[in-house]
Length: 300
Image 1: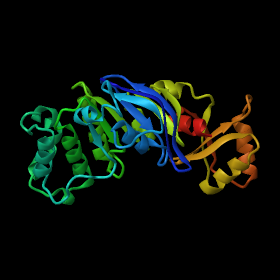
Image 2: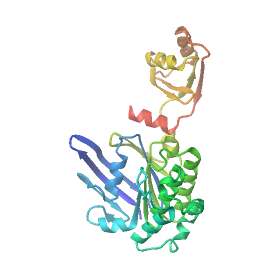
Image 3: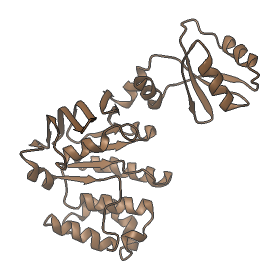
Image 4: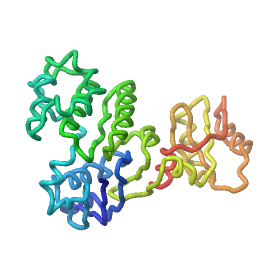
């Protein structure tokens, strides 16, 4: 049971949050919605989980229409919002028992589904949720979202503000959940997480820029990228932006990612230009594009 979205649009007064969004998520697929804050990810999630009604377009979740079949959808999906939304004054076990009871099930009945995650927080089951670390809150939220065995799982920026180790553990958990035939739609502002999805949709200002596998999106990047570094990185960025042949310039870790507008670009020409601007310790090397490079190019 997958997801179909057809020409979904949503406005808040004069602000168009979503503009003709269309895509499909296959049954059992791990699909990523990748974009910065304000791109429209949360609005789309709220529409698909029946919390908002779109101004235009249609969508189905596990075969159910998000408007006419909203009660059936709420029984067959789970939504984990970006902000921790469990009861902070209840313990881990009390939160989990509460959500199981709401859906007419028990922890025991669906324990196998959450076992891999729950065993990591079970030693602290009597601790109140408000006293948990970010990573443990995340795992508890995922357990509560899975306890009624949903067909489709919505995760809205689940790793925002979580440490790198917990982020990796979380994505490992998602890969294991896929094997249990659960369709997963996850949104994230982190471009490195995009590579962990089966397919991704790049979204900016309420519009889908591109949909494909991470490898295919990177493969179709049109330009050669160069890692550029110098003794003064701030000055380097400004000097490159002022260079009449630049196509794109933006910081990327310890380097500046640079692309040139010429077809006959020569590294030595650029180096001489940078030297003439009183920069030193210059290195310019070819590098492979990333999903972030593709996003920046599409968003220009």
